[in-house]
Image (cartoon, rainbow, N blue to C red; front, top):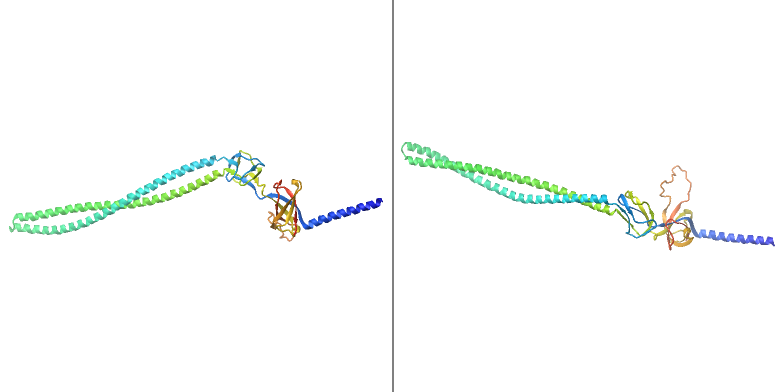
Length: 371
């Protein structure tokens, strides 16, 4: 009786283990199973300032929820504000200097236009007077030559008592008067020549002023460029002052606080780590030997121990086109011909139907239904 009972127990145990083995291997055959799975977030970011400086205020604590656009930390902007004031003063000085140069140029151009017109008119008028006077002097000199001859002839005739002395005095008086007139015209001619030189000097001065206007224009262009550069620098300083305030880029929870105020940081140094707990998914590293039948859209069951072993339904979203080792910093060297075949793993992304109680970084077990 005892022997029969023992045999029955053994048979029952064999059946139970056979059933368990059947279920186990059947499950493994129908599903790709992996223990190398982790809960991750699409939005997990290290937040840093775009400028360096002394952090004077840290607003949030670790594990504290934040809203998009909420202030997180502040850098002391004093140095930047001082630089901005200096730049504003420089810009103001440049603007005043530029306005003065532009006004001077306008006045010079107006004055130059008038001076050029006057100098040109004077030169033309004097030239015409000189030409006219030159003709008159030549005509008077021709007439004087004739009167000189007549005076000599009249003198001889008077000495021979052929004419009265009054006739001789008359012709000599005419000669002397014409000679004096010619001398007057020559003095006037020399005066006109001096006036012509003065008009020419005035005209040359307008050329100098034209060069001065050209130099002023070059100076205006240089100052305009300098002013443009300073205004651009002012915009950059305003940006940097804005960068002294660190805001949350999205809704989430402070996962880590890297520093405490006061603290001097460099540009780009992490201040907070922010995670969006509403954008969680499961990432699986699946052996290439288990990839058969695993495709996007397949159903998956994710078991998270930290959530009390709760099973969460999901779906395969994507499969990496390369193995996880493809982008290794130290790639395998097979140039020597020595090669050991290693099992490669591929990253698979699984969307989750329920993310309640989950946290980024939790480990999980995954069973992906094969097709």
